[in-house]
Length: 418
Ligand SMILES: Nc1ncnc2c1ncn2[C@@H]1O[C@H](COP(=O)(O)OP(=O)(O)OP(=O)(O)O)[C@@H](O)[C@H]1O
Ligand SMILES: [Mg+2]
Figure 1 (cartoon, rainbow, N blue to C red):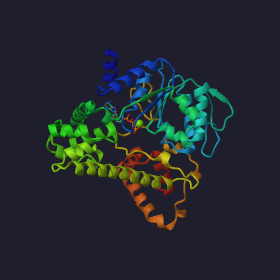
Figure 2: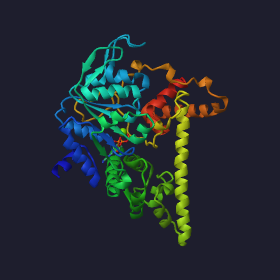
Figure 3: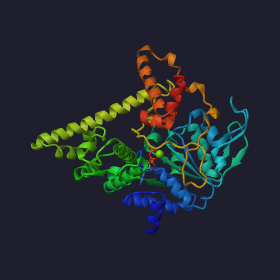
Figure 4: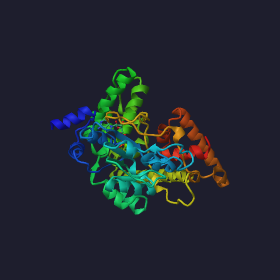
């Protein structure tokens, strides 16, 4: 119990949910071994804290913890980033370079969004997991490394395996222990606790009085489904803290910050919060209709995203569903280099832009696109430019807002020659 409090205060984790507590305890238990851990759960549930805990409680804590966002690295460079390359192994490889698996020797590697790894990289990864062996790109010399791997994903891995996007053997190797973080709507008791913590944080950040919720707003907050989980809640609290003049927020004000709030609520809440819900059969029928609209909207969004993804993929790559993401919400700026040594401050390891190489065949030539989709391209390009401008070229933030992966955004920047 004391240990649990210790983890929570050390890593600033808010919440008292049973399932969350179990996951935190398990993370500490497994930290002393080198067992592979796969962290699962919806987008925004807090998966990134787990590798930090595991690293800090392990004997590796004085070595590096390197976080790699597998979804953000272009396919053409990922092997070289992870495993290094020999001088001259491809155009642009002017010198021999160490990969993260070599740099992190003795430490921990966090493979975030592991479901996005290309199949060829998955083969290399399996080998490292099995016997610690790897080869630099363009080299036939086998090297050894001693790293502990923690991976995370918000994809349904069984579906990815069925579709041939993810190797089953690798999945089993990665998920010796699986830690599942529950969605925020499954942790209703924690919602208000988190709200208060974020309200205090943002009041401090923006030097303003703390926002508070009226009783009806608390009830509304606890019934909302939070598709973007804690990230979305944090984002909403930040917006309210900055935008609202009054510091005592009503349900009416709060509702404005929930996208499609009534579609995101459970039907029971929608009907009970509606003033003229007298007739039972009518309200049941309406619930069904709400559900249908919600499902339709979701499908429409998925379709939109698939179309968006297709346009940046090779024509033979027909199945883009793996790349469809749940809507993401803006979070704090992802720091680039340097990689932290003690794991207290998890930063994503990235190459500097000048080191980035990619396979040109990856990108669809925009001039070959059929005429009817040209205007769509224009719109797409405008949106990309706008979001890049808004976030001053920070691809992660721009990609988050556009609802696409950073890798897709990278492709599109190349494709449109932006
Ligand atoms: N228990 C918690 N207490 C306080 N803040 C939290 C908690 N869990 C998550 N957060 C915050 O919520 C945000 C989202 O968490 P995180 O980035 O770990 O999500 P994720 O599960 O990795 O999502 P994705 O799959 O989209 O990458 C972060 O700002 C994180 O600090
Ligand atoms: Mg994450």
